Image (cartoon, rainbow, N blue to C red; front, side):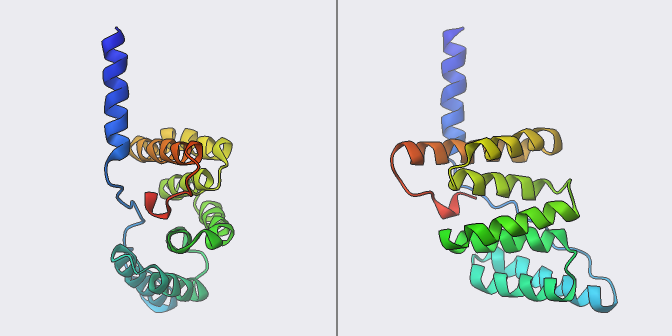
Length: 167
């Protein structure tokens, strides 16, 4: 029985050490009209974000939201782009994760990324609350958040600044 718990611990550590992959919201279908222009900007922002050009992605998501404020995925990815640029953006990032979840309470990616942000901010209680929600919504994302929380806990224990690119 002891060997099983050691094997589980070893496997968990290996998974936590794997390179992190973003799980941003996918591009959306583009309808006609003003909403279509906003979604086209959002989709361009996703492409730029995937290239890790976060400041440019931020501008595109902001433009999309200026046209159509109710795109939860745009708030989610704007929050991600802000968070990836600097700790100075954490408060603003949190507001956009909150707005994404107001619009779409079932947007699993927003819970995952907000949980990462909470862990980077040292708010493990709220990070674990988002982990609980994710275990119901998307077990795969819950596993990723669990790894991010573990990494943030190790960084905090070792006196290191949180890694921006953890997810």
